Image (cartoon, helix red, strand yellow):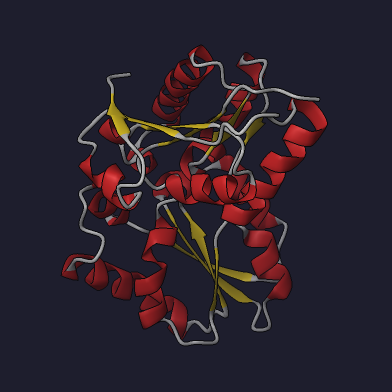
Length: 258
């Protein structure tokens, strides 16, 4: 089965490029379209109704660009809107949610930390997943301000370091041995997080798992490309400079209102 249409990926901003990168690495021949809704970031502070409406707007744009499947590369959008998206659109969706399961199953201390947005931690989907692991203590922490700092290009600022130390220190004191990153922006913070966490604490994000699931859906439902069409396209509805920087200026970024 072949299908030369692109894979669509969207996020509330630039963070989902961490997911896009894992997909592009695993499936380099697939064309991808990445949509950064930075104008409306962060989603984590918005109501469920707003998140659903913004997610539908993004999906409409990607479908208009002939995408064959859509990756919701945003924990907040997945946990609040993916059910509504699947009900409304006849296209496969792949979501992303905090990787509680591998952390809980492998934890020796039976204490794990989750750093995520308010929208993700308050969602029904997240809480249903967390309830499955009654024998594990889950330390939840809302990453207030982290997404906005990343979106503003202040990835390595003193303020970022200060916030991360404030959020992570109570988890260290609670004896976590796994930290789950529950926002697609947060993998860009791993170098700084590693400076704060003791070496034995493992960090988990969802990039590789989402890429493998994308590959599975292509194989089973949609079809792979049979051409060398792996050049990605990036769209953003605000200043493109931060997205260009996070991509190391390797790809052109199109600023477009959507």
